[in-house]
Length: 152
Image 1 (cartoon, one colour):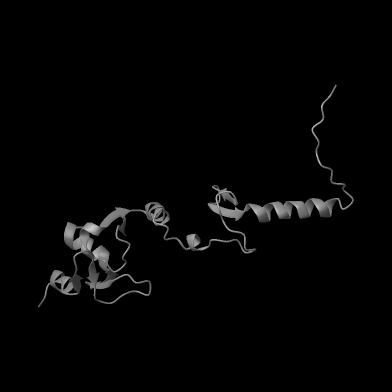
Image 2 (cartoon, rainbow, N blue to C red):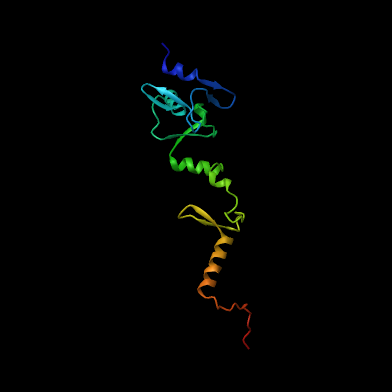
């Protein structure tokens, strides 16, 4: 009878870079491995087999390959570290959105960043909404250009 370790490593294809899990995969692309009476993520099982204990935190991929089980491509972290890593590597879905719903490009000059809600909005659209609200509140408003006045 094969050991758990033998069963695990026979499902791994070692390349010069990542060690690819060739066993079953989850819907999201992570390797799955039957460990005793429960199924665990393959990269977590790799951590256990390498370090001798189950990780008390998330096992994150430095290579960004979900099916990689190479121990030196993994590091421990929490959800916040995982999100920071994903943001630095521009892997979050939000980075694929380059224009607002009205077609204005999100540039440094045209983006309002809301750190309290960790979101962004379009400056052009915000200014247009403000102008529309002002005009609706006071439809008879006369717009005057400001002039520099010199007092004598």
